[in-house]
Length: 79
Image (tube, rainbow, N blue to C red):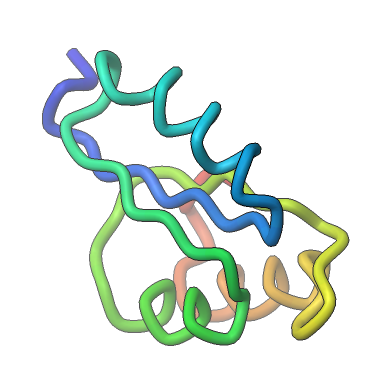
């Protein structure tokens, strides 16, 4: 059911990314990860994906601000 989904993980903690990718690898088809919310922002605006797992406390662009950006461009994406 979920094997063709694209998930995005954004977290400034590498260990959290590793854990999330391990959890998601057998559930969804593709997992894209970013340790930097500025880099993730471009991907999240331009690319197609199905769900976002997002740390809300990040040093460059705060996760809550990134949620607003995602909602502006893709209002129906689950975060």
